[in-house]
Length: 241
Image (cartoon, rainbow, N blue to C red; front, side, top):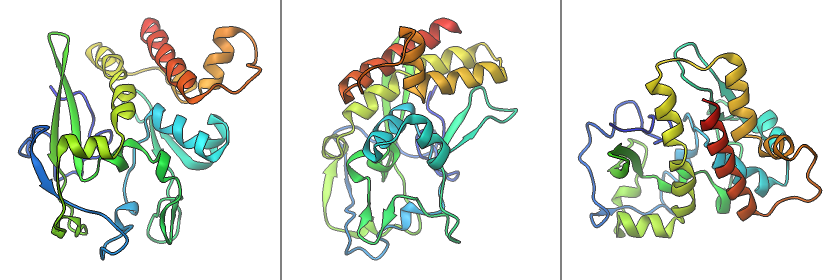
């Protein structure tokens, strides 16, 4: 069973981990994105970009704002009647093309801290769990607007992950899978109050830290401290469910 949703894996409707040929870590693919390619920046428009808690952590630090400020200005939180838990999406600009708010003439303005779905493209990744062990699955995402596949550069899936610095993103995001699997296994949607707790705990770590310590933190934690705090928040929330 693939335990990553379409949005989390950044998979278009016409492609899925179940229907596309899988890639091994040692398999190679041809792709290169750079300012000279004719479709440069087109993948940053008209998309539903799901944001994980770790994505928000990195982006809000890049922008030097609080988690709540990021959610207020750059995110859309959806919690529909068919959703088990709330989903957070990047709020696109109303410019007629639904462009990413961080795209500029030279490319991504938050490139060093861009979301995991942006980093892994043109690959899609899912993780399945069997007997307590996680198994990765990869596919290539061929979208009509993208001409990066026409470039000569080739790399393996493993090389691409290292080049795009995906290790930290994968490790943090994979910690969420047991949490999601547990809730979906209960076949019960979160209540509105539980949904708000989900957002307050995982997407606004300052609130979780304040609640867990009983007081406002005196200093801003470092990135590594926040990664640890996020792990603690995930574990705490799983205990609540």
